[in-house]
Image 1: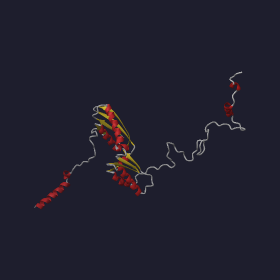
Image 2: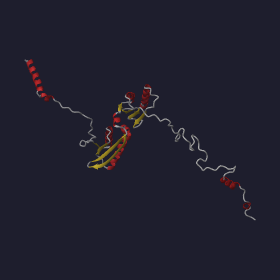
Image 3: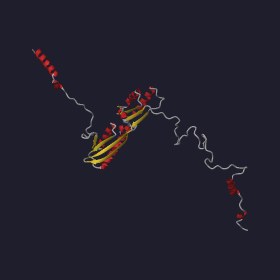
Image 4: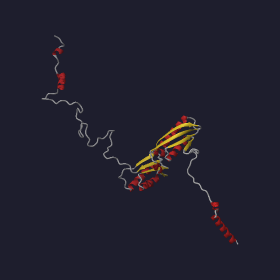
Length: 290
């Protein structure tokens, strides 16, 4: 009997699923995306908000991370135009000069504000010296110990540049970086090639982002470094008087003097000699006495 009941129940369930009862088993799902309700205005798409200096810095870094060229900020809790102007100036300078990503990617930031009812509205424009693809290609490293493997992978993939965001640098970070590059260049037989160029952002002492240029341009041939601020002359160039490699003769650029004729000096020379060497007039020497 129990077997018959269980069989009937299974049959009923199967009929229910086939006849539209599957709606009882439907489930809804949702996806979550990174979003900061603190910085984005809920009612204005693409508009950020800020209430202090740090909020403005965070807003600008969000825009830089997205490679946004223009945006609108709403500033709350600011009491005067001067306070807004000072905050914008300090925040833009901090992002561009003191943050790793800003120093690496940003060329300039401009901001202009005007007062609204209850807040200041700021129009922001950002110019970049790195492309969106370059920003998206930045990789993360927890410490300088990971640089060797990241550089090796970049060479294997044929990349000409590598940007690494550093989580920790440490006192021996510079030494470990140089050791990693030296070891890798020796292993890949690259010691005779042009050295790689390394740039540190925002600075070399505590870099938050390091850029490696793995295929820098070679120096131009025949380009000699100038000494003591002077430009080295080009090889095979003409001298100042039209002579190759020669020095300018005396009286260069001055009027030419006529050659001596019959062993006599030029007229101008004779007059000078007569004034300097001619004996005095006896009448003048006697003082004009009779």
